Image (cartoon, rainbow, N blue to C red; front, side, top):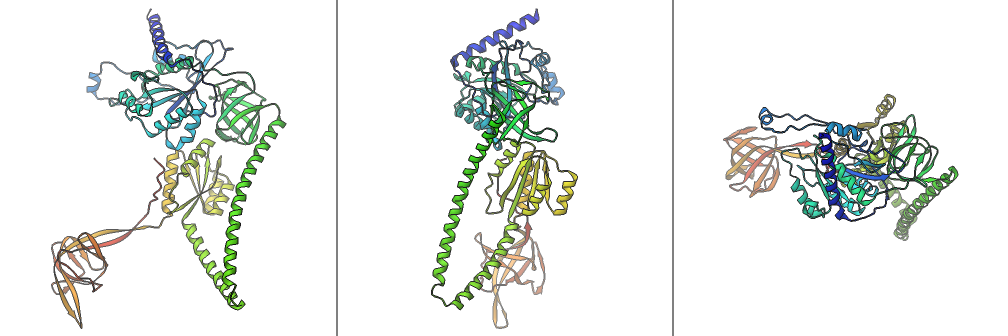
Length: 616
């Protein structure tokens, strides 16, 4: 009986959500997808297709790509436990978890879709470094599930994701996360989103807002229901027939399988033996596997799939198209390479033409300069100029080597390399140290990378890749640095430190003592009258061997050293706090005034830091 009541309650709730969404109208968004991303970040995207040949009424593996939610037991005091009237149940969600397992863990009824429908959840990163990835994610999806933390509010990356969704004309479902926290304020989040034209249903808009907790699992089923209901209203469908169309999610090189891509199929049904073209590469599909590594024989629309059989490694975001034969695939790839080469030749010709004009102008000026000279005088001047040019070039080379950081980037997948390169493109401190990207690619660090780094005197940065013992020994022998990281932010911090190490040290002044001038007088030394200041040490101590500066009305009017430092008539090297002294400066033209300050200080070299701010 209780089970039936739960099902009825769930049906009524779903019906209410459906009626609320009916105000959105009957819209149809075509499945024009360009790119999807891996599941490990903050902003979720969802897409749906109908598979009429599938008769299973359950969602099945709808949340198989759902990100891993790590359950943590928060420490609560005995007082809070006594006051708590309702305990929260923590639910563990893992990759590959089915709807049945999730519903069983949450003690909820199973939410069923109309026959054969399937929902795929995908994530895009949450940091500004991944702007291009989020933009492609918005273009490839049909529904954007935007996750906003209830305790943080609207962040910069949230605003950027909203803009990408609007540009792609994709509807948004708002998931307000961390609602289990005491400081959570979902209403504040909704009000902040009004400034970006995201109006929730509570405020008369058409954007659904679901309060969820990834930690405890609260309302995750309600979020799935809201997404499914919106997909039904929009009538999102894909055509399983015809030539295959898709988008490369990620690409990498596997030692046993060669070039591998993970892709999302958008149209048609992919099967073993299909001939595909993506970017400047083509493939005959030898093997396909799902997100769990299980071999599959066909991939229908909205299915993420790993594809083996590529001749070269395509880039993340490339469009996948099916062609009828291998010769056709080769012809398409050759044509694309030819077009790219022609564009590059045009750019090179422009640069060559500009250099040629500069050379002609310099040659014309040289002819005018030497036109009225005797040949002996002309030869001597040319010899002197060549000599000066050689010395200046050697100096420039030395300065350039010390103020330039050549970098080689290697990553595990194409998307990671793209994110790192995009961050490096924000470098704006070339006046301090020039940053040169010599080479970037996918795969482990190789001997060619070490040789390239040795030639350019650069540093190799690797993300989620390995460098074998042989490679590391070779790099150490050649004096090449190899720095491997598992977190992009740590890699960029290391890069900042390396840039800072190339900068000259900064001299900082550290005060040792301060004194105020109480009286001024002159002392005769030989035939000269030397101005002397009668001072009292107010702070620290004055040391004769250190450097001094004279401050008047807050302005430094002199810096240098002392010629004498006396206590009464005795020459001493140190005057401590509270003692009186007389001192004279190395520059006799400086006149003392009562009320001036004398500061004793020492200079220390401090490592400089680059002014480049990557944004995190």
